[in-house]
Figure 1 (cartoon, protein in one colour):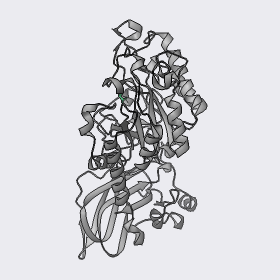
Figure 2: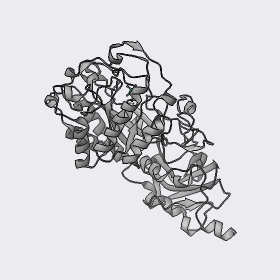
Figure 3: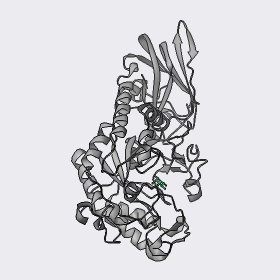
Figure 4: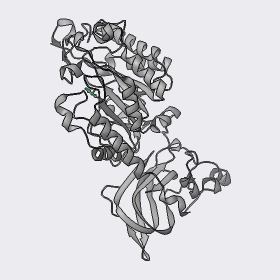
Length: 464
Ligand code: FUL
């Protein structure tokens, strides 16, 4: 028995990600596009009565969006097919408040089509944001609206090819035009939208789609829009509606959460989600984008970076230049894993099949694992020559769960082990953890995993 349990792979430490959740996490970075009536009226939250005739991009080019996003490493894009103002960017059968009553292509346009086509052509994944809150619809807040909303989801889920993610936004501000009623309407989001049914409609056509928001998501909001995940970040979470909306716990998660609900960091490259001329000088710099990356992907979350499209119908040149420059620096930073040439030793190894050497190969399914019950261990990497390092990358093999609670990094130089000075707490790892420090020379690097929930399994380790 003992032999069997140590030779086979470690027991899973529940909960674990589904195949779809693992694939979603491996995307790491993808984009949001906020575009609609707000763009042309300098607004963030249209009231629901802005004339459809004001939607009039002068030189719209979805291929420019897609090529820009690809050049900055984005793996997919999520479009605001409908924001809170209720204006639909596709010619829906559910309302006249749509692109078909705008001057764009004389009412013959369909932005969801144009963007999904450009994505398919250039190999980017495509996703949809369709706001549950609708400040235009007369029936909003009553029973009649819910069927209409579900029909919109059905149109979007069935007509534009495969969707990788569907976004049910959480905002429900209350007041709106509502067919001319101009009043405040309260709903109980947890029950009103029938999110189970909404999700089933998405999955009927896109069984692999990740679900953001609502009552039955497959991932969770990070709890802020500043682009910041917790330094401690568990992918496990309590799946009840109250917890899903608790901004105090979302950025950290729970070591004992019952559900695998990995975190998504949504943040805009400009101060607003929609384009505003007076924010042209406030676009995040490549350095600030790098911070966002380390604070999201570097802490076990995915980064959903928003690009506001301007009135012309393009991603502005400053935004695209900054994002591309950021991505180029990122690629440079991680161009070569300095550990590749190292000898690696582990204080404990399950068997040859789970050798420490596997943290250095590219295969995700090859990993180092300890024996059952061993949840403290260390890895030592010996460089052929003293080497300057300023970044360490760690990845747990999450198909077996997220386990590490605490770790330390030390360097061997001039005959002794010294701690590496690090500005943030070294607690969780999860799918990926990136640790930055001042460049420092070392002959060996030691990673000590000092506390964990279960058997240790690391699939990749890097130093840069
Ligand atoms: C929020 C919305 O209210 C914002 O307008 C934006 O769409 C953001 C991504 O989500 O809840």
